[in-house]
Image (cartoon, rainbow over all chains, first blue to last red; front, side, top):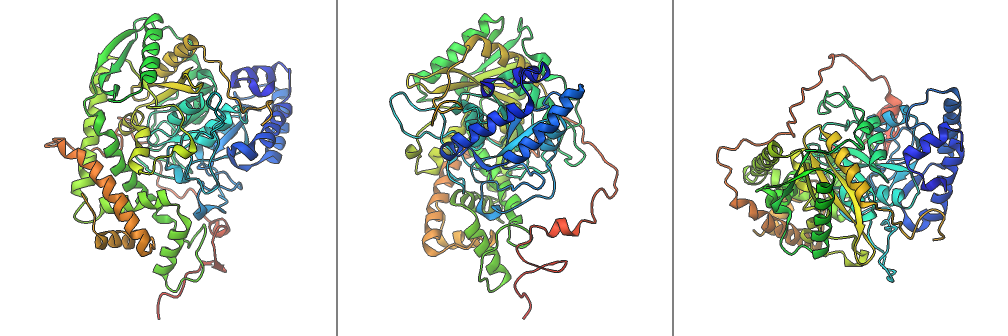
Length: 494
Length: 96
Protein backbone atom coordinates (compact mmCIF):
# COMPACT_ATOMS: atom_id res chain seq x y z
CA UNK A 1 0.00 0.00 0.00
CA UNK A 2 1.17 3.51 -0.82
CA UNK A 3 0.48 4.58 2.77
CA UNK A 4 3.02 2.04 4.08
CA UNK A 5 5.96 3.57 2.20
CA UNK A 6 8.58 5.66 3.93
CA UNK A 7 9.26 9.17 2.63
CA UNK A 8 12.51 7.94 1.07
CA UNK A 9 10.72 5.09 -0.73
CA UNK A 10 7.87 7.32 -1.89
CA UNK A 11 10.26 9.96 -3.24
CA UNK A 12 11.96 7.26 -5.30
CA UNK A 13 8.65 5.79 -6.50
CA UNK A 14 7.45 9.25 -7.62
CA UNK A 15 10.63 9.77 -9.61
CA UNK A 16 10.38 6.34 -11.23
CA UNK A 17 6.73 7.12 -12.15
CA UNK A 18 5.51 4.06 -10.25
CA UNK A 19 2.67 6.24 -8.96
CA UNK A 20 1.74 9.92 -9.07
CA UNK A 21 1.71 12.53 -6.31
CA UNK A 22 -2.08 12.71 -6.75
CA UNK A 23 -2.38 8.95 -6.12
CA UNK A 24 -0.08 9.16 -3.11
CA UNK A 25 -1.97 12.10 -1.63
CA UNK A 26 -5.36 10.52 -2.35
CA UNK A 27 -4.28 7.35 -0.51
CA UNK A 28 -3.60 9.52 2.55
CA UNK A 29 -6.75 11.66 2.36
CA UNK A 30 -8.74 8.39 2.07
CA UNK A 31 -6.97 7.07 5.18
CA UNK A 32 -7.84 10.28 7.01
CA UNK A 33 -11.50 10.00 5.91
CA UNK A 34 -11.60 6.43 7.19
CA UNK A 35 -9.77 6.89 10.49
CA UNK A 36 -9.92 10.47 11.71
CA UNK A 37 -13.44 10.13 13.15
CA UNK A 38 -11.96 7.72 15.66
CA UNK A 39 -8.26 8.66 15.99
CA UNK A 40 -8.95 12.46 15.95
CA UNK A 41 -5.35 13.07 14.88
CA UNK A 42 -6.34 16.09 12.78
CA UNK A 43 -8.18 19.19 13.97
CA UNK A 44 -8.47 20.56 10.43
CA UNK A 45 -8.24 18.45 7.26
CA UNK A 46 -7.31 20.21 4.00
CA UNK A 47 -7.86 17.42 1.44
CA UNK A 48 -8.90 19.69 -1.44
CA UNK A 49 -5.89 21.95 -1.05
CA UNK A 50 -3.66 18.87 -0.74
CA UNK A 51 -4.97 17.34 -3.97
CA UNK A 52 -4.56 20.67 -5.78
CA UNK A 53 -0.95 20.84 -4.56
CA UNK A 54 -0.38 17.21 -5.61
CA UNK A 55 -1.34 18.07 -9.20
CA UNK A 56 1.29 20.82 -9.20
CA UNK A 57 3.81 18.39 -7.69
CA UNK A 58 3.20 15.97 -10.56
CA UNK A 59 4.03 18.72 -13.08
CA UNK A 60 7.17 19.63 -11.14
CA UNK A 61 8.22 15.98 -11.09
CA UNK A 62 7.52 15.62 -14.80
CA UNK A 63 9.74 18.64 -15.48
CA UNK A 64 12.60 17.07 -13.48
CA UNK A 65 14.80 18.78 -10.83
CA UNK A 66 12.13 18.44 -8.13
CA UNK A 67 13.22 19.17 -4.53
CA UNK A 68 13.42 16.24 -2.07
CA UNK A 69 9.93 16.45 -0.57
CA UNK A 70 8.03 17.11 -3.81
CA UNK A 71 4.69 15.34 -3.62
CA UNK A 72 5.19 14.00 -0.08
CA UNK A 73 2.02 14.37 2.06
CA UNK A 74 2.68 15.59 5.61
CA UNK A 75 0.69 16.49 8.71
CA UNK A 76 1.41 19.87 10.32
CA UNK A 77 1.06 20.32 14.06
CA UNK A 78 -1.65 22.92 14.66
CA UNK A 79 0.87 25.19 16.34
CA UNK A 80 2.52 26.27 13.07
CA UNK A 81 0.78 29.24 11.46
CA UNK A 82 -0.35 28.34 7.95
CA UNK A 83 -1.42 31.09 5.57
CA UNK A 84 -5.19 31.03 5.11
CA UNK A 85 -5.64 27.76 7.06
CA UNK A 86 -7.13 27.89 10.56
CA UNK A 87 -4.49 27.52 13.29
CA UNK A 88 -5.87 26.82 16.76
CA UNK A 89 -3.08 25.59 19.10
CA UNK A 90 -5.94 23.24 20.18
CA UNK A 91 -7.34 26.13 22.22
CA UNK A 92 -10.79 27.66 22.28
CA UNK A 93 -9.24 31.10 22.68
CA UNK A 94 -7.92 31.07 19.08
CA UNK A 95 -10.25 28.37 17.79
CA UNK A 96 -11.22 30.57 14.81
CA UNK A 97 -7.79 32.12 14.07
CA UNK A 98 -6.80 32.18 10.40
CA UNK A 99 -3.20 33.41 10.04
CA UNK A 100 -2.51 35.78 7.14
CA UNK A 101 1.09 34.49 7.03
CA UNK A 102 3.10 31.25 6.91
CA UNK A 103 5.56 30.11 9.60
CA UNK A 104 9.18 29.84 8.45
CA UNK A 105 9.33 26.07 9.01
CA UNK A 106 6.16 25.34 7.01
CA UNK A 107 7.21 27.83 4.30
CA UNK A 108 10.50 25.93 3.95
CA UNK A 109 8.65 22.60 3.69
CA UNK A 110 6.36 24.06 1.01
CA UNK A 111 9.38 25.38 -0.92
CA UNK A 112 10.78 21.86 -0.69
CA UNK A 113 7.64 20.55 -2.42
CA UNK A 114 5.78 19.02 0.56
CA UNK A 115 2.00 18.66 0.54
CA UNK A 116 0.02 19.51 3.69
CA UNK A 117 -2.84 17.17 4.56
CA UNK A 118 -4.06 19.23 7.49
CA UNK A 119 -3.39 20.46 11.01
CA UNK A 120 -2.72 17.86 13.67
CA UNK A 121 -4.11 17.77 17.18
CA UNK A 122 -2.06 18.56 20.30
CA UNK A 123 -2.35 19.40 23.95
CA UNK A 124 -3.71 22.95 24.29
CA UNK A 125 -0.82 25.35 23.52
CA UNK A 126 1.47 22.27 23.59
CA UNK A 127 1.08 21.97 27.37
CA UNK A 128 0.66 18.34 28.27
CA UNK A 129 2.00 14.83 27.93
CA UNK A 130 -1.11 12.90 26.94
CA UNK A 131 -3.09 14.95 24.41
CA UNK A 132 -5.72 15.20 27.10
CA UNK A 133 -6.03 18.99 27.16
CA UNK A 134 -7.02 19.72 23.53
CA UNK A 135 -10.18 21.82 23.20
CA UNK A 136 -10.94 19.66 20.14
CA UNK A 137 -10.97 16.37 22.07
CA UNK A 138 -8.28 13.79 22.77
CA UNK A 139 -6.37 11.71 20.24
CA UNK A 140 -6.58 7.92 20.34
CA UNK A 141 -3.24 6.11 20.18
CA UNK A 142 -3.42 3.74 17.17
CA UNK A 143 -1.79 1.08 19.37
CA UNK A 144 -3.73 -0.97 21.94
CA UNK A 145 -2.70 -3.44 24.59
CA UNK A 146 -3.05 -7.09 23.69
CA UNK A 147 -6.61 -8.29 24.40
CA UNK A 148 -7.57 -4.96 25.93
CA UNK A 149 -9.66 -2.37 24.11
CA UNK A 150 -8.81 0.52 26.49
CA UNK A 151 -8.14 3.77 24.65
CA UNK A 152 -4.51 4.76 25.21
CA UNK A 153 -3.12 8.28 24.94
CA UNK A 154 -0.68 9.01 22.09
CA UNK A 155 1.56 11.07 24.38
CA UNK A 156 1.95 14.79 24.07
CA UNK A 157 2.01 17.41 23.15
CA UNK A 158 2.56 16.41 19.50
CA UNK A 159 0.17 13.45 19.93
CA UNK A 160 -1.89 14.12 16.79
CA UNK A 161 1.28 14.19 14.68
CA UNK A 162 2.57 10.96 16.26
CA UNK A 163 -0.77 9.15 15.86
CA UNK A 164 -1.18 10.34 12.25
CA UNK A 165 2.28 9.06 11.28
CA UNK A 166 1.83 5.74 13.13
CA UNK A 167 -1.64 5.13 11.62
CA UNK A 168 -0.41 6.00 8.09
CA UNK A 169 -2.59 9.12 7.94
CA UNK A 170 0.57 11.06 6.94
CA UNK A 171 4.05 10.04 5.75
CA UNK A 172 5.63 12.35 8.28
CA UNK A 173 4.60 15.28 10.43
CA UNK A 174 6.02 18.34 12.10
CA UNK A 175 6.14 18.46 15.86
CA UNK A 176 7.39 20.93 18.43
CA UNK A 177 9.25 20.02 21.58
CA UNK A 178 9.53 22.18 24.70
CA UNK A 179 10.20 19.50 27.34
CA UNK A 180 9.69 16.28 25.38
CA UNK A 181 6.69 16.97 23.14
CA UNK A 182 8.23 15.34 20.05
CA UNK A 183 10.16 12.50 21.70
CA UNK A 184 7.63 11.20 24.25
CA UNK A 185 4.68 10.86 21.78
CA UNK A 186 7.08 9.31 19.23
CA UNK A 187 7.97 6.68 21.84
CA UNK A 188 4.29 6.10 22.77
CA UNK A 189 3.31 5.62 19.11
CA UNK A 190 6.32 3.58 17.93
CA UNK A 191 7.78 6.16 15.55
CA UNK A 192 10.93 8.33 15.26
CA UNK A 193 10.86 11.84 16.73
CA UNK A 194 13.79 14.25 16.45
CA UNK A 195 14.14 17.42 18.50
CA UNK A 196 16.97 19.43 16.95
CA UNK A 197 19.40 21.67 18.82
CA UNK A 198 17.71 24.79 20.19
CA UNK A 199 18.12 27.34 17.39
CA UNK A 200 18.38 24.83 14.53
CA UNK A 201 14.86 25.55 13.21
CA UNK A 202 13.26 28.98 13.17
CA UNK A 203 10.51 29.65 15.70
CA UNK A 204 9.00 32.43 13.59
CA UNK A 205 5.29 31.87 13.03
CA UNK A 206 5.13 28.97 15.49
CA UNK A 207 2.78 29.77 18.36
CA UNK A 208 5.04 30.29 21.37
CA UNK A 209 4.88 28.34 24.63
CA UNK A 210 8.32 28.75 26.29
CA UNK A 211 10.61 30.67 23.95
CA UNK A 212 13.96 29.54 25.40
CA UNK A 213 12.94 25.88 24.96
CA UNK A 214 10.55 25.57 21.98
CA UNK A 215 12.01 23.81 18.98
CA UNK A 216 10.40 22.33 15.85
CA UNK A 217 11.37 18.92 14.50
CA UNK A 218 10.29 15.98 12.33
CA UNK A 219 8.21 12.93 13.32
CA UNK A 220 8.52 10.03 10.88
CA UNK A 221 8.55 6.24 10.51
CA UNK A 222 12.31 6.00 9.88
CA UNK A 223 15.50 7.79 10.91
CA UNK A 224 16.30 8.43 7.25
CA UNK A 225 12.92 10.15 6.80
CA UNK A 226 13.61 12.33 9.83
CA UNK A 227 16.94 13.32 8.29
CA UNK A 228 15.27 14.25 4.99
CA UNK A 229 12.61 16.37 6.72
CA UNK A 230 15.09 18.06 9.03
CA UNK A 231 17.27 19.14 6.10
CA UNK A 232 14.22 20.93 4.71
CA UNK A 233 13.11 22.49 8.02
CA UNK A 234 16.42 23.73 9.44
CA UNK A 235 18.40 26.88 8.74
CA UNK A 236 19.03 30.48 9.73
CA UNK A 237 16.14 32.93 9.59
CA UNK A 238 16.43 36.72 9.79
CA UNK A 239 12.95 36.73 11.39
CA UNK A 240 14.17 34.80 14.46
CA UNK A 241 17.36 36.11 16.07
CA UNK A 242 17.62 32.96 18.24
CA UNK A 243 17.72 30.80 15.11
CA UNK A 244 21.37 29.95 14.65
CA UNK A 245 23.49 31.09 11.75
CA UNK A 246 25.08 27.65 11.40
CA UNK A 247 25.38 25.75 8.12
CA UNK A 248 22.87 22.91 7.68
CA UNK A 249 24.60 19.67 6.66
CA UNK A 250 23.11 16.97 4.44
CA UNK A 251 21.64 14.96 7.30
CA UNK A 252 20.73 12.03 5.09
CA UNK A 253 24.42 11.38 4.44
CA UNK A 254 24.82 10.62 8.17
CA UNK A 255 22.48 7.59 7.94
CA UNK A 256 24.43 4.37 7.93
CA UNK A 257 27.74 6.10 8.77
CA UNK A 258 30.22 3.83 10.55
CA UNK A 259 30.11 3.98 14.34
CA UNK A 260 33.60 2.53 14.84
CA UNK A 261 35.23 4.13 17.86
CA UNK A 262 32.23 6.33 18.71
CA UNK A 263 31.79 6.73 22.45
CA UNK A 264 28.26 6.30 23.82
CA UNK A 265 27.62 7.59 27.34
CA UNK A 266 25.19 5.89 29.73
CA UNK A 267 24.14 8.40 32.42
CA UNK A 268 23.84 6.73 35.81
CA UNK A 269 21.17 9.20 37.01
CA UNK A 270 18.64 8.02 34.39
CA UNK A 271 18.40 4.75 36.29
CA UNK A 272 15.58 6.30 38.29
CA UNK A 273 14.36 4.57 41.43
CA UNK A 274 11.21 2.55 40.83
CA UNK A 275 11.83 2.28 37.11
CA UNK A 276 10.18 -0.70 35.47
CA UNK A 277 12.23 -3.79 34.67
CA UNK A 278 10.99 -3.61 31.09
CA UNK A 279 12.38 -0.13 30.52
CA UNK A 280 15.71 -1.16 32.07
CA UNK A 281 15.75 -4.25 29.82
CA UNK A 282 15.12 -2.32 26.60
CA UNK A 283 17.81 0.17 27.60
CA UNK A 284 20.29 -2.70 28.15
CA UNK A 285 19.30 -4.14 24.79
CA UNK A 286 20.09 -0.79 23.14
CA UNK A 287 23.47 -0.67 24.89
CA UNK A 288 24.29 -4.16 23.59
CA UNK A 289 23.22 -3.26 20.04
CA UNK A 290 25.44 -0.18 19.95
CA UNK A 291 28.40 -2.07 21.40
CA UNK A 292 27.84 -4.67 18.69
CA UNK A 293 27.82 -1.87 16.08
CA UNK A 294 31.33 -0.84 17.13
CA UNK A 295 30.65 1.80 19.81
CA UNK A 296 32.53 2.07 23.04
CA UNK A 297 30.13 2.23 26.02
CA UNK A 298 31.16 4.70 28.73
CA UNK A 299 29.51 5.33 32.09
CA UNK A 300 28.89 9.04 32.69
CA UNK A 301 27.24 11.14 35.36
CA UNK A 302 24.79 14.02 34.97
CA UNK A 303 24.48 14.88 38.67
CA UNK A 304 21.78 17.57 38.34
CA UNK A 305 19.33 15.36 36.42
CA UNK A 306 16.97 15.07 39.39
CA UNK A 307 16.49 18.84 39.43
CA UNK A 308 15.56 19.03 35.73
CA UNK A 309 11.79 18.74 36.10
CA UNK A 310 11.44 21.18 38.98
CA UNK A 311 13.57 23.71 37.10
CA UNK A 312 11.48 23.16 33.98
CA UNK A 313 8.22 23.73 35.88
CA UNK A 314 9.46 27.17 36.92
CA UNK A 315 11.00 28.30 33.64
CA UNK A 316 8.40 26.97 31.19
CA UNK A 317 5.36 28.41 33.05
CA UNK A 318 7.20 31.73 33.53
CA UNK A 319 7.80 32.06 29.81
CA UNK A 320 4.29 30.79 29.05
CA UNK A 321 2.66 33.40 31.29
CA UNK A 322 4.51 36.08 29.36
CA UNK A 323 3.88 34.63 25.88
CA UNK A 324 0.20 33.98 26.50
CA UNK A 325 -0.46 37.52 27.72
CA UNK A 326 -1.22 38.42 24.09
CA UNK A 327 -4.50 36.46 24.13
CA UNK A 328 -6.73 39.21 25.42
CA UNK A 329 -9.76 39.12 23.14
CA UNK A 330 -8.92 42.42 21.47
CA UNK A 331 -6.88 41.82 18.31
CA UNK A 332 -7.67 38.21 17.41
CA UNK A 333 -9.28 35.12 18.81
CA UNK A 334 -12.38 34.67 20.90
CA UNK A 335 -13.84 37.54 22.94
CA UNK A 336 -16.16 36.93 25.88
CA UNK A 337 -19.61 38.54 25.69
CA UNK A 338 -21.06 41.04 28.13
CA UNK A 339 -17.88 42.61 29.53
CA UNK A 340 -18.46 45.86 31.41
CA UNK A 341 -14.86 47.16 31.42
CA UNK A 342 -11.56 46.44 29.72
CA UNK A 343 -10.27 44.43 32.70
CA UNK A 344 -13.54 42.53 32.81
CA UNK A 345 -13.14 41.77 29.09
CA UNK A 346 -9.64 40.38 29.66
CA UNK A 347 -10.63 38.34 32.70
CA UNK A 348 -13.74 36.82 31.15
CA UNK A 349 -12.08 36.14 27.79
CA UNK A 350 -9.07 34.45 29.37
CA UNK A 351 -11.16 32.46 31.85
CA UNK A 352 -13.48 31.14 29.14
CA UNK A 353 -10.88 30.73 26.40
CA UNK A 354 -8.11 28.85 28.23
CA UNK A 355 -8.46 25.30 29.51
CA UNK A 356 -7.61 24.29 33.07
CA UNK A 357 -3.99 23.18 32.49
CA UNK A 358 -3.10 26.31 30.51
CA UNK A 359 -4.66 28.53 33.21
CA UNK A 360 -2.70 26.64 35.87
CA UNK A 361 0.60 27.19 34.05
CA UNK A 362 -0.08 30.88 33.40
CA UNK A 363 -0.89 31.35 37.10
CA UNK A 364 2.20 29.39 38.17
CA UNK A 365 4.35 31.50 35.86
CA UNK A 366 2.78 34.72 37.06
CA UNK A 367 3.54 33.71 40.64
CA UNK A 368 7.21 32.80 40.08
CA UNK A 369 7.79 36.06 38.21
CA UNK A 370 5.93 38.28 40.68
CA UNK A 371 7.64 40.83 42.92
CA UNK A 372 9.16 39.21 45.99
CA UNK A 373 9.32 35.72 44.48
CA UNK A 374 11.36 36.31 41.32
CA UNK A 375 14.75 35.69 42.94
CA UNK A 376 13.61 32.71 44.98
CA UNK A 377 12.09 30.88 42.01
CA UNK A 378 12.89 32.19 38.55
CA UNK A 379 16.44 33.40 39.13
CA UNK A 380 17.25 30.29 41.15
CA UNK A 381 15.88 28.07 38.37
CA UNK A 382 18.00 29.87 35.78
CA UNK A 383 21.09 29.17 37.89
CA UNK A 384 20.21 25.49 38.27
CA UNK A 385 19.72 25.44 34.51
CA UNK A 386 23.34 26.54 34.11
CA UNK A 387 24.40 23.56 36.26
CA UNK A 388 22.27 21.17 34.17
CA UNK A 389 23.91 22.45 31.00
CA UNK A 390 27.40 22.13 32.58
CA UNK A 391 26.63 18.46 33.29
CA UNK A 392 26.05 17.88 29.58
CA UNK A 393 29.12 19.92 28.55
CA UNK A 394 31.29 17.84 30.89
CA UNK A 395 29.78 14.53 29.75
CA UNK A 396 30.34 15.47 26.11
CA UNK A 397 34.05 15.93 26.80
CA UNK A 398 34.14 12.17 27.36
CA UNK A 399 31.52 10.86 24.92
CA UNK A 400 29.94 11.66 21.53
CA UNK A 401 26.34 10.79 22.33
CA UNK A 402 24.18 9.66 25.26
CA UNK A 403 21.71 6.76 25.27
CA UNK A 404 18.74 6.77 27.69
CA UNK A 405 15.12 5.62 27.79
CA UNK A 406 12.70 8.17 26.25
CA UNK A 407 9.91 7.79 28.78
CA UNK A 408 9.50 5.97 32.10
CA UNK A 409 6.52 3.92 30.85
CA UNK A 410 4.71 2.84 27.67
CA UNK A 411 1.52 4.69 26.67
CA UNK A 412 -1.07 4.84 29.45
CA UNK A 413 -4.86 4.64 29.18
CA UNK A 414 -6.99 7.76 29.05
CA UNK A 415 -8.76 6.77 32.26
CA UNK A 416 -5.45 6.16 34.04
CA UNK A 417 -4.65 9.88 33.87
CA UNK A 418 -3.26 10.97 37.22
CA UNK A 419 -5.32 13.57 39.10
CA UNK A 420 -2.21 15.17 40.58
CA UNK A 421 -0.53 17.45 38.00
CA UNK A 422 2.91 16.62 39.47
CA UNK A 423 2.41 12.89 38.68
CA UNK A 424 1.52 13.87 35.10
CA UNK A 425 4.66 15.99 34.80
CA UNK A 426 6.86 12.96 35.68
CA UNK A 427 6.27 11.60 32.16
CA UNK A 428 8.88 14.06 30.92
CA UNK A 429 11.57 13.11 33.43
CA UNK A 430 14.02 11.77 30.79
CA UNK A 431 13.31 14.33 28.06
CA UNK A 432 13.36 17.60 30.02
CA UNK A 433 17.11 17.77 30.88
CA UNK A 434 18.19 17.79 27.20
CA UNK A 435 15.60 20.52 26.53
CA UNK A 436 16.91 22.63 29.40
CA UNK A 437 20.44 22.40 27.97
CA UNK A 438 19.38 22.91 24.33
CA UNK A 439 20.84 19.57 23.19
CA UNK A 440 19.49 17.75 20.12
CA UNK A 441 17.78 14.45 20.95
CA UNK A 442 15.87 11.74 19.15
CA UNK A 443 13.56 8.89 20.13
CA UNK A 444 13.82 5.65 18.15
CA UNK A 445 11.35 2.76 18.57
CA UNK A 446 13.16 -0.39 19.70
CA UNK A 447 10.71 -3.10 20.75
CA UNK A 448 7.29 -3.96 22.14
CA UNK A 449 6.67 -4.48 25.84
CA UNK A 450 4.89 -7.64 27.03
CA UNK A 451 1.51 -5.94 26.54
CA UNK A 452 2.36 -5.27 22.90
CA UNK A 453 3.09 -1.53 23.20
CA UNK A 454 6.11 0.21 21.66
CA UNK A 455 9.06 1.38 23.76
CA UNK A 456 11.62 3.91 22.57
CA UNK A 457 15.17 4.88 23.41
CA UNK A 458 16.54 8.40 23.37
CA UNK A 459 19.84 9.58 21.88
CA UNK A 460 21.13 12.95 23.08
CA UNK A 461 23.86 14.72 21.12
CA UNK A 462 26.20 17.70 21.27
CA UNK A 463 24.92 21.10 20.22
CA UNK A 464 24.41 21.27 16.43
CA UNK A 465 25.56 17.67 16.05
CA UNK A 466 22.31 16.11 14.88
CA UNK A 467 24.43 14.09 12.43
CA UNK A 468 25.85 11.86 15.17
CA UNK A 469 22.43 11.10 16.66
CA UNK A 470 21.15 10.34 13.14
CA UNK A 471 24.12 8.02 12.49
CA UNK A 472 23.70 6.22 15.82
CA UNK A 473 19.89 6.26 15.49
CA UNK A 474 19.99 4.59 12.09
CA UNK A 475 22.30 1.86 13.47
CA UNK A 476 19.98 1.35 16.44
CA UNK A 477 16.99 1.19 14.10
CA UNK A 478 18.72 -1.40 11.91
CA UNK A 479 19.73 -3.55 14.86
CA UNK A 480 16.31 -3.32 16.52
CA UNK A 481 14.43 -4.15 13.32
CA UNK A 482 11.22 -2.67 14.70
CA UNK A 483 8.55 -3.70 12.19
CA UNK A 484 5.48 -4.08 14.42
CA UNK A 485 2.36 -2.24 13.25
CA UNK A 486 -0.40 -0.55 15.24
CA UNK A 487 -3.82 -2.20 14.94
CA UNK A 488 -5.44 1.07 13.84
CA UNK A 489 -3.92 2.07 10.50
CA UNK A 490 -4.73 2.78 6.87
CA UNK A 491 -6.17 -0.25 5.11
CA UNK A 492 -7.37 -1.92 8.32
CA UNK A 493 -11.02 -1.23 9.12
CA UNK A 494 -11.45 0.92 12.20
CA UNK B 1 5.03 25.59 50.75
CA UNK B 2 1.39 26.51 50.90
CA UNK B 3 -0.23 29.43 49.21
CA UNK B 4 -2.88 31.60 50.87
CA UNK B 5 -6.13 32.70 49.25
CA UNK B 6 -5.20 36.38 49.13
CA UNK B 7 -1.97 35.64 47.22
CA UNK B 8 -3.83 33.32 44.85
CA UNK B 9 -6.39 36.07 44.15
CA UNK B 10 -3.60 38.56 43.54
CA UNK B 11 -1.90 36.22 41.02
CA UNK B 12 -5.19 35.66 39.18
CA UNK B 13 -5.68 39.43 39.03
CA UNK B 14 -2.14 39.97 37.69
CA UNK B 15 -2.70 37.28 35.05
CA UNK B 16 -6.15 38.74 34.20
CA UNK B 17 -7.82 35.36 34.55
CA UNK B 18 -11.22 35.68 36.22
CA UNK B 19 -11.76 32.86 38.73
CA UNK B 20 -14.70 32.26 41.05
CA UNK B 21 -14.21 31.32 44.73
CA UNK B 22 -14.32 27.60 44.08
CA UNK B 23 -11.76 27.85 41.28
CA UNK B 24 -9.50 30.05 43.41
CA UNK B 25 -9.46 27.39 46.11
CA UNK B 26 -8.69 24.62 43.61
CA UNK B 27 -5.85 26.65 42.07
CA UNK B 28 -4.50 27.48 45.54
CA UNK B 29 -4.29 23.80 46.45
CA UNK B 30 -2.74 22.73 43.12
CA UNK B 31 -0.16 25.50 42.94
CA UNK B 32 0.70 24.80 46.57
CA UNK B 33 1.36 21.17 45.63
CA UNK B 34 3.58 22.12 42.71
CA UNK B 35 5.47 24.68 44.82
CA UNK B 36 6.05 22.02 47.49
CA UNK B 37 7.53 19.72 44.87
CA UNK B 38 9.76 22.50 43.53
CA UNK B 39 11.31 22.94 47.01
CA UNK B 40 13.72 20.18 45.99
CA UNK B 41 15.77 22.99 44.41
CA UNK B 42 16.60 24.26 47.91
CA UNK B 43 19.20 21.47 48.07
CA UNK B 44 21.19 22.91 45.17
CA UNK B 45 24.06 25.24 45.99
CA UNK B 46 24.04 27.95 43.32
CA UNK B 47 26.54 30.25 45.02
CA UNK B 48 28.52 32.01 42.29
CA UNK B 49 26.63 30.27 39.45
CA UNK B 50 25.48 32.67 36.72
CA UNK B 51 21.86 32.39 35.52
CA UNK B 52 21.43 30.80 32.12
CA UNK B 53 19.73 33.15 29.72
CA UNK B 54 18.58 31.49 26.53
CA UNK B 55 20.44 28.30 25.70
CA UNK B 56 23.67 30.10 24.72
CA UNK B 57 24.59 27.46 22.17
CA UNK B 58 27.63 29.54 21.15
CA UNK B 59 26.16 30.41 17.78
CA UNK B 60 26.63 33.97 16.61
CA UNK B 61 23.42 35.95 16.31
CA UNK B 62 22.43 36.69 12.76
CA UNK B 63 22.25 40.46 12.33
CA UNK B 64 19.94 41.97 9.76
CA UNK B 65 19.67 45.40 8.29
CA UNK B 66 17.60 47.80 10.38
CA UNK B 67 15.04 48.39 7.67
CA UNK B 68 11.30 48.04 7.18
CA UNK B 69 10.59 44.50 5.95
CA UNK B 70 6.84 44.36 6.23
CA UNK B 71 3.83 46.60 6.66
CA UNK B 72 1.08 48.41 4.81
CA UNK B 73 -1.26 45.46 5.37
CA UNK B 74 -3.98 46.92 7.58
CA UNK B 75 -6.61 44.46 6.36
CA UNK B 76 -4.41 41.47 7.21
CA UNK B 77 -3.72 42.89 10.67
CA UNK B 78 -7.42 43.39 11.31
CA UNK B 79 -8.58 40.19 9.61
CA UNK B 80 -8.93 38.23 12.87
CA UNK B 81 -10.33 41.03 15.06
CA UNK B 82 -13.28 39.87 17.15
CA UNK B 83 -14.78 43.35 16.71
CA UNK B 84 -13.68 46.33 14.65
CA UNK B 85 -14.87 49.67 13.45
CA UNK B 86 -13.30 50.72 10.18
CA UNK B 87 -9.53 50.58 10.59
CA UNK B 88 -9.73 50.22 14.41
CA UNK B 89 -9.93 47.42 17.00
CA UNK B 90 -12.71 48.09 19.49
CA UNK B 91 -12.75 47.60 23.27
CA UNK B 92 -15.34 48.42 25.94
CA UNK B 93 -15.39 52.05 27.03
CA UNK B 94 -12.35 52.72 29.24
CA UNK B 95 -12.91 56.43 30.06
CA UNK B 96 -16.13 57.47 31.79
